Image 1 (cartoon, rainbow, N blue to C red):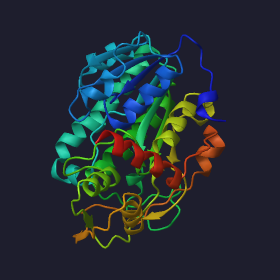
Image 2: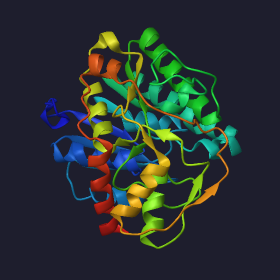
Image 3: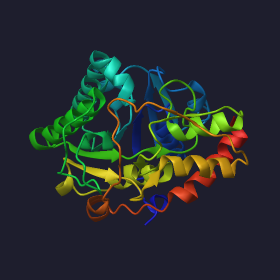
Length: 324
């Protein structure tokens, strides 16, 4: 079943945190297109105001500018909400190594505030973004829930701690929580700029501008790149998931494996350029290979990703050509 075929109560209200970000704004857009009420929370520290200005005139949309590190703001945001889709966090493994205290405050205390606010406000389902980084140095592929290695970064630690807190809130307080371990999400509105930008939009922008991209390492690292529509499906299907599987975390990916150097030359061909990359040092804390088993999400959430890397990257290239 496609997520567009899901039917929530027509009066359902969703809260999307991090709504001005890449994943958050895509979730908001889909929910509004489906006719549901959406509350959006973002402090605009990394999200972009233009990502939510698209929705300002929609009567089902309301925006609260605020920070998840403030409990009262989280409670205000959760009032009257049935489903929380918690995407707000600071990403980037290398940046977390530089700023561990900040990541603890935002990613751990921020999600704890949201969990507590959801509990106090009687939210039905709390779906939150985790990360494939929780697998750490576990070498085996595909990555399987319950088989994790040593964590390699403060960012990974915050996401693993998020999962443990969510599990406790399900067990102790009866709040249905569902963790989604995203694997290298890509799609429209993903920020191509900055030192910590995701690799696909960064490469695309640089190649469009005839700039020479830097590849960290030898380019032979592999990733399970996951198109944004697959992530949207996972979030919405988690809102339909049975209470019996609450407290669990799930791999959200396509289940494929792409090598970075192959992707780079794929982009060169698609953009009709032959710029050779610069190879730089490996990034500290990075996982060499990433590929997900998605069987648990398929069985427990009904997750059925329809967008392969090949299909998704065509859409992304077209979007960036039109919007950069």
